[in-house]
Image 1 (cartoon, helix red, strand yellow):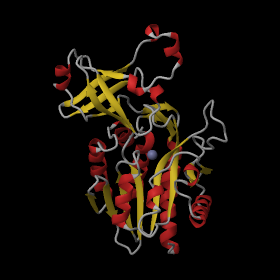
Image 2: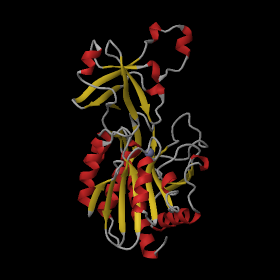
Image 3: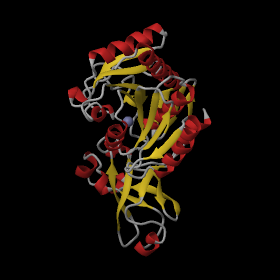
Length: 346
Ligand SMILES: [Zn+2]
């Protein structure tokens, strides 16, 4: 696995606490752009080129996670969830509390099955009933290591599952951040290309809103991940995306509550992909949306599209994706921008 991709997947960045991943993105964007700055919300905006047209690329750098809410007198920690996390995946996981004093290891605990009454055992576990054990005996001891408001991420490392299939934490959307960097590195066009590494996407598409307002581009491409449906228990009608089948071109998000991609944008993506022999898949989502949902409604409306990398087990400690789909997403993003500039579209 590419070192940069691994570094992005392994770094911490719960929504509102993006500092660690943001430092990486700032440094990497500096290498491939003419100028880089951080906006008031914390999103990183990089600019390359000085042609007439302004094109915005956007991938969010925040990830879903937890935040310390309360510490009891025995030193056990209660937490809130930031972003959409299934409570059932939490029990027994190793986590890292990102404290000012350094990383603190913890285990998410709950009542053992042996101690549960029959009725209790039938119920789905709720995050409110779980706690984090950092191995201390008192609240005072805990406060010597952490404080209320510290962010918490899963403790896991990215790697290769098999062949072209990779796994890692925060696949959504560090894979998009990686695409963003590769596109900025390779792209050479006579235009102003803005790469945005947005904050707080998982909690309301916030960073992309202020960044799009500031840039006011003529066109925007949002690069994200999307939920693959090629696993047991998922019906083909629930999700059409498959790993290894190419870049995902979304037409509608969240049954129309997210972006409804303009016909012209849809046709453009498809024709550019066909012409350049880039593997792609087209789909409609009933749930889930991306930064595109807010970017296309910014100012007087900004024409926009979404290109995604399908991923399994999204928003869990380990997402699985195909590096081939990542490469297809990089290619289609570059070819689409070249096409827009050449044909003077938007
Ligand atoms: Zn995402």
